[in-house]
Length: 132
Image 1 (cartoon, rainbow, N blue to C red):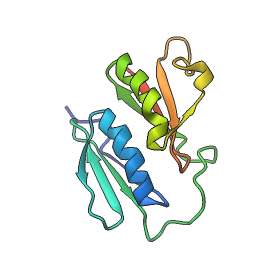
Image 2: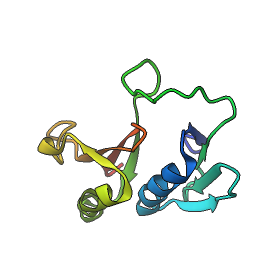
Image 3: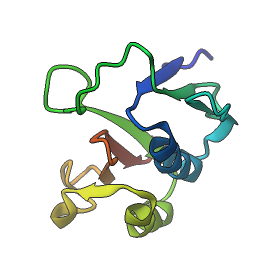
């Protein structure tokens, strides 16, 4: 079966900070670090073959990321069980993530939708969704 998403390439301002944040988040979701070359890049691979690439490109325009501007608003990733979702919520701030919509956890996306919404230090939003 062909995977739906081949890869994701995320440009960041501070690779060291972003690598720490994303390594924790992706590791909790079963992704394995594939490369941290020290040349301003890092990558992770999911068991389904999808990979996530993080870099500070020479072509990067040094402006803060704003998920409310046209473009990608957020990334939604899945988690297998509620226990992991709750643990991620409890641990997220110590790994550089800020919880969004905390007053509506775990149903900020609606009563039939169980998810955790997080924001990285650079303003990238990730929705961690329970189930498929």
